[in-house]
Length: 320
Image (cartoon, rainbow, N blue to C red):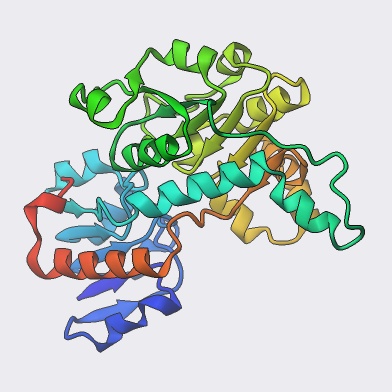
């Protein structure tokens, strides 16, 4: 029996397969895991499959319908002999396209311009900037980072990148240069994050990093919210240490989804949560609700790859 959590309407085809599946709209967490007993778990990013969940249910395998797997305790899974599978390549171009959707919207003041036309047909105060000739700093040169570099070259941008695990052959192939993290922060006009969230890079961008950046710098994050310290980001914008931000991910996303009422959001006690609420309201911040993966084509790839993972347990998609 497979427990399919975070079930959404677009995944209803799973009920027409020959697999023995029970679907649940709610995410799987340590607070609700005791009522479940499954041989296999299938989850999305909003589920938190920690050590307690794994020990309570003891599944044979966990299948995550995402590329990232920071919501799964891999050490506990390995210790318990539980296999973990992901969908490594479903959204490389999808997320890269969303990265540039955010960047173009920020650089051309698209939202402000559209809002202005509801009141007056006037472009006063809406001057943007060109991407051509700007230096883009890409943090992480995996599949998504590489797609971002390709698109950037099409816009005539100069690209530098930081990755602790360099792929030297990529520099000549894609036309960019690897630099140190500090050099990237100092030199980049735009900084775009495309790395997984780990213990080592949690709050990769914090108050010291913002001090290093150009005051005109723009930050784009379509990777994981925990890569940026929300409070430090808010202060950097207030102090004009950077100029603008485009975010598809934020710290404490699940709490933001639960607290739909703005007054409830404002009263939430956690400082990071309050910082996120203030960021959402700023004119120099554009936020989308972790929507970078959300295309028809990407969803089809997620669904098909997950089914293949479940039916065949392919080694190439196995994380643990």
